[in-house]
Length: 394
Ligand code: SDX
Image (cartoon, rainbow, N blue to C red):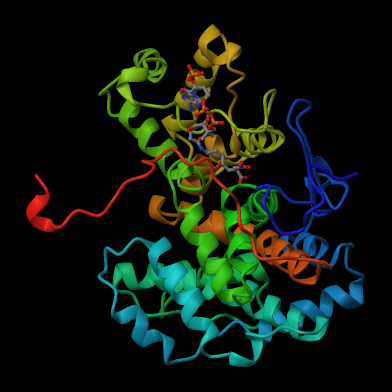
């Protein structure tokens, strides 16, 4: 069952495409990865297992999983030369700027992966990207703090290894609590793909020109950065902090979000497709309720978030417009409880979404009859104008 909108694998002139990776029913709040309902991953042990499902189309066997995991370990380091790029960024550089730049820079070290003609090459490029995106993200954080880089640990699993590179010190290794590893795995799973969202459509659009996988994913990072898209999880925390600081009450904030002139939106609310509920938000709310009291006992932001949700969901403005919490409403609170800094929230979203981007890029790359994306427009500009010499212009 796929969303047949038009029979065009690559956004011909219609601005939409056919895909068999992720299915969404916005009215029923259904989200399925390769046909599997998102709820069935609630106890999934591994983000990597779901990444392989999205990319390969089927859940991996134990042997396939072990082989891909070995590649992720093998590919975890980045070329020492890339460290000079980090040094060139100001400490306060937005990590999403660094991530996009460094994914592009990464492709320069693997020119053989610019032309992916067979499955083997594609698998290797995918493993390199999925493994190294953690290292790049962690190094961006370490650079922002003036901390030494922590090399990936060969014996650690994907998520604990990322947190090790983020938080370990030369004198003390960060030990990832199982509850954190499980929660962050699930957060990455819930972000792994979402059909033709803005950033995934960007990856497909850029990839349709023949741009390599790395360049296409670097473009996806830029699209995800926007506050209306992946950047919303940061804006949600800013919103909750404003209320927590006492600058405004939840009631006043909701009132402001209803006032068009205020240009304020209830961040983490609303969705172009979900017009009932976002199943991911429901699962993330549950994680937040279980995890935050354990990790960050007195975090008032969770109560503020719940109060905002309660007010909005009883307000006709939001109910009539079918505005419900989306994936970004609770994710930031959970990441904050894990000690992840706010400016890394969207980077975590990008790490999660990367397998989806890779899967879509390859689906389109492989699709028979795939063409360069070339949406059309309705022209609303001046017609029949003529050139005037400078002296005749006023
Ligand atoms: C993600 O596409 C995806 O799948 C994205 C994503 C993914 O996994 O890739 O799900 C991830 O991007 C989630 C969305 C994160 N963004 C936010 O939380 C930002 C706040 N939300 C909004 O800006 C908005 O709801 C969007 C961007 C999510 C959706 O925008 P739409 O579909 O274009 O909705 P709209 O702007 O046309 O709004 C429709 C009406 C308008 O009012 P009216 O003109 O009808 O009177 O609803 C209002 C809007 O003003 N509205 C809001 C609102 N969202 C919509 N009013 C207040 N607060 C909000 N959050």
